[in-house]
Amino acid sequence: MISAGLIKGIENGGVLVNNTSSGALAGSIWFIGWLFTIGFAKLIWWKALLAIVIWAYYLGVAAIG
Image (cartoon, rainbow, N blue to C red; front, side, top):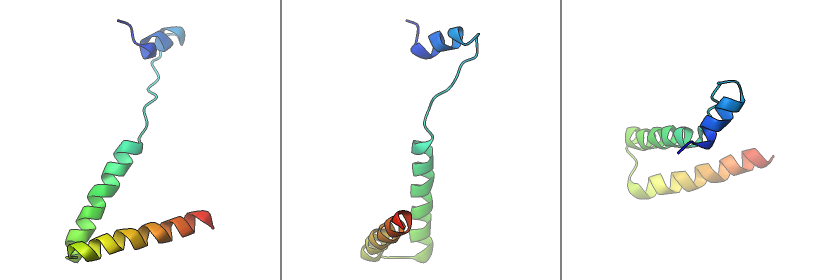
């Protein structure tokens, strides 16, 4: 079976274009970094959860205004 990407590559003169999103990779790197930060700061579980909620709030406020 021929994939749609291969057909597009043939139509573009043999140049294959990779249309993948890097959002999953960035999210994974962010999550690994967050786990490292929690471990480095030696936060207990409820402080880590509170930090995630507070950080998300301040990030949302900064993004809006």
